[in-house]
Amino acid sequence: GRGERDRGRGASESREKEDLVARVKNIQREDHKGKEAWWKYCDSVKTGSRDPQRHTEEFIRNFLDAWGRGEEPKPPERGDSKSDGRTLKLRGLPYTCKAADIVEF
Picture 1: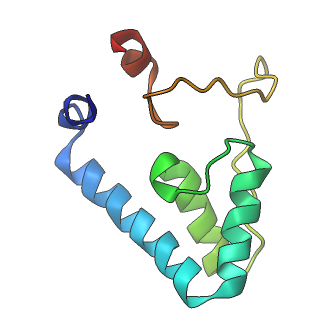
Picture 2: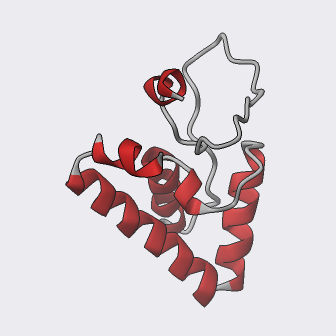
C-alpha cells in the first residue's frame, strides 16, 4: 500500500516534496494566472493530472523556478530519446512511482 511505499523514502525527501506541493497550491489559490500557468504546465506533459502531489519534485521545482523568475514554465527536457511521449497509467499506482514500485505492485 501507499504507506509501504512512503516508508522507503527519506523523511527529508517527503518534507521537501510537501513544501513544494504547498507552494504550488498557494500559487493556485492566490493568483488566477498562477493557476492557469500550472494547468498549462501540467497539460503540456499529458499526464492527465494537475495535482502537484502526483508529479515529481523535479517537475514541481522546475515550475516554481520559472514562475519565480516571471517566465512561462516549460516542462524539463527528457534525455531519453527512446520515449515516444506516451504515458502508461496503472490503477492504484501514483504517477510518480518508480520501477521498483511497479515490480512490487
